Amino acid sequence: MTLSLDWVLAALPPLQWNLVLIPPITGIIGYITNWVGIRLLFHPLEFRGFRMPGLKQLAPMLPMKIQQIPGVMDGKIGWQGIIPSRSAKMGSVAYDASIAKIASQQEFYERLDPDRIAQHMVEQSRDNFHAYVDDLLDREQPVVWNSVPDGARQFIHARIEQQLPEVADRIMQSTAKNIDEVLSLKLMVIDYLDNHPELLNRMFLEVGEEELKFLVNSGFYFGTLLGVFSIPLFLFFNKAWWVLPVSGVLVGYFTNYIAIKAIFNPQEPVEIGPFTLQGLFIQRQEEVAERYGEIVAEEIITVENVAQNLLYGKRSDRTRRMIEEAIRPSLDEALGMAAPVIRVATGDRRYEEIRDALATEGVEYALEPLQDTDFNRERSIPVKELIASRMQELPPQDFTMTLRSAFKEDEWLLIGIGAALGFVAGWVQLLVVTTVPI
Image 1 (cartoon, helix red, strand yellow):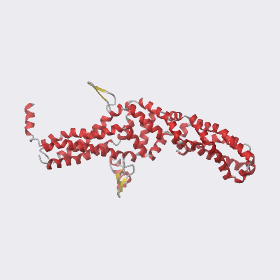
Image 2: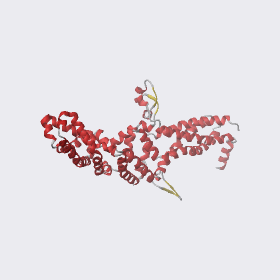
Image 3: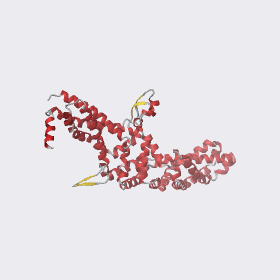
Image 4: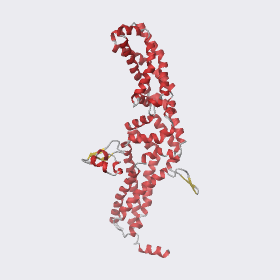
């Protein structure tokens, strides 16, 4: 064994000091490689490139990995951040991987507190509802409404104000009872993040801030370490020109591969002597849960967004019908003294149309106060507490998907970028080694 090692050492040419530059160059390129890889993961928000004739027709026949590159399926050459390019899909993954495992939409709705929402609606809606009834009746039947005595108008306004708490409570209780029929929290999250890709980026960037920094910095550390092994290979193959470019590919590949694995693995603590190994992201579970809960509660699962989804989402017809049914009985009672006058002047059919219009347009007025920024901030606190506490209790395999989902499907692309840039780095090393004097 000793003779064999001596023979190998004797066969190697004398060490040249310019070869010492290989590891730091590899480290620097590794750092740049990972920095570029992270940038390409999130930026740009919008596609930048050009359309290539014939590519759209060719794209379905290309390998699946190539089809996944942003723009290819649309016949374009260029780039868009991987996360924003798949904002709808990433929103779905974010919901399934974390939010759905934290609580049901019934639990989220209860944390928003229907009773407190109803109270806020009443507090903010009194003046609006008075103006809304006046405007609508004046628009629909100006002659009739102007002929209604002032006393009757004041009575209607007083009755509306008196009825508001009951109406608001009826709306919120009906919504709570039928929440799974009128609200799809998953569709709400997907639609919102699809329309706000910058928020999707922010979720991953802020939740995984430390891990992304590690991924970038590890490019230098692992790159330098692995670059050391390029020196004996370069010498062993008698300085063949292809050694450093090939080594660069391997270094670029394994640098990113090792870094990503170190972020998420091992999931359970592993004792090695006095050391405990565990994925870097998992070690920050408590801290991450707080930040994730804050973003989701303040930006996504808010009173305003839920109200918007109820009114304008894919199930809005059910919501509007439910709210109209909740409003109509109170409108009949509120119209009180004026109802006979309007019925006589317009006829029963026209009266019913006016009442239906009051109920239909009343849906918008009923939920308008829920856009209040301060109120949304107030109601975000219990939602954040729910998310943070439940997220801190998630098992490691579920918790890691909070950030892992950003990498999992496109990990090959991030590693591939590292390998490609490592190939470039290899040529830079070759240029330095062959031009810098000993």
